[in-house]
Amino acid sequence: MTEHLTITGLGHRGDGVADTNDGPLYVPYTLPGETVTVERVAGHPDRRHLVHVDVPSPARVEAVCKHFGQCGGCALQHWQLSDYHVWKRGLVTAALAQVGLDAPVEDLIDAHGQGRRRAVLHARRGDRDLLEVGFTAPRAHHIVAIDECPILAPGLAGAIPAAWAMAEILKPMRKPLDLQFTATDAGLDVDVRGSGPLSPRDSAALARVAAARSLARLTRHGEMVAQAAQPTVTIGRATVPLPPGAFLQATAQGEETLAGLVREHVGKAKRVADLFCGIGPFALRLAEQARVTAADIDEAAVAALKRAAGSPGLKPVTASARDLFRRPFVAAELKDVEAIVFDPPRQGAERQAREIAGSAVPLAVAVSCDPLTFARDARLLVDGGYKLVTVTPVDQFRYSYHVELVAKFVR
Image (cartoon, rainbow, N blue to C red; front, side, top):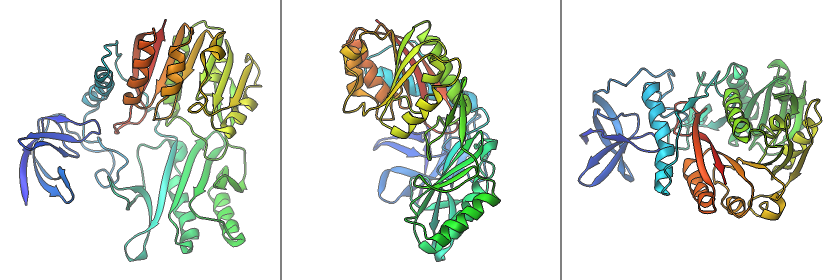
């Protein structure tokens, strides 16, 4: 049974919203101002499936990918970028408003650049036992098989065929696979997860794929299968050897944009703490002008940062592996710090923010990938005596509802 709705707004996950007497209804792939025909979604009374756009918005555009609407990787390819950018900035202002903060929010910076330099492809057996390699469907667990993805950087050009080749080898194991691809200076770095222990025969077959596809390195849960070259990335003046499966910002331009804002806000500070530092995208650039104390729970990432910190032209970087959720830096440890940078995972850094709020550090720079947890932590800093000077949204996840930001706080 179908019904007709008028879309009045967009939800925080990019779904169109229709206001009804029974409350809001959410319709993916629709835009404000559109009249649409929809049908109910079993088990989800507040959701509708789009059947047809009856009156399209002037802002509707042709999707750039033939898999859009079936693959769950993108939510907003149907919207012109100018309106999409305004909406994405609005996610940040709305999150701040929820906690009572009215801070200057700059225009969103588009940092998609050449596209995403890392991707996780999934391999599963589908209907009739057929192999499927691709991304998950929207709000579902089944895989949408793909043969191209226009939002990936050129460095990932060989990722999809390589994933299919490796999945074919491991298909008899009948296990769901996740294949993480990262574009590095040395070529593709691949980590296979979910396969379980590999037999010598499987390892040899995967090594042949790695050689045929010119992969820099192939690992299984971090264990070496084949390596032709050490995967590295360049961060400022430093060359960083990547641990298997290492975290990187989604796009190279995104990392450069975030780091540029961090350096601008840190200014001339000579003693800086970089918390949740990862492999050092901020620490290594800041070390060109300041002594840096860095920490992260990821021991392999910290080890890579330590190796890269010996690059010529950098001031000393002291890095340690530390669980900042359980053991945040306390005020006494920050007494000689002139500026603190923190870039936590999506859950934010509530305990660390409380300690910063109780410290005397004159300047704090927050980097976040979640406006809601950032707003919570920002409220703690403001209540502790900081002023939120500026917030800059950054978009390196084009066509999604994810948004990054960099914020400056001063005492």
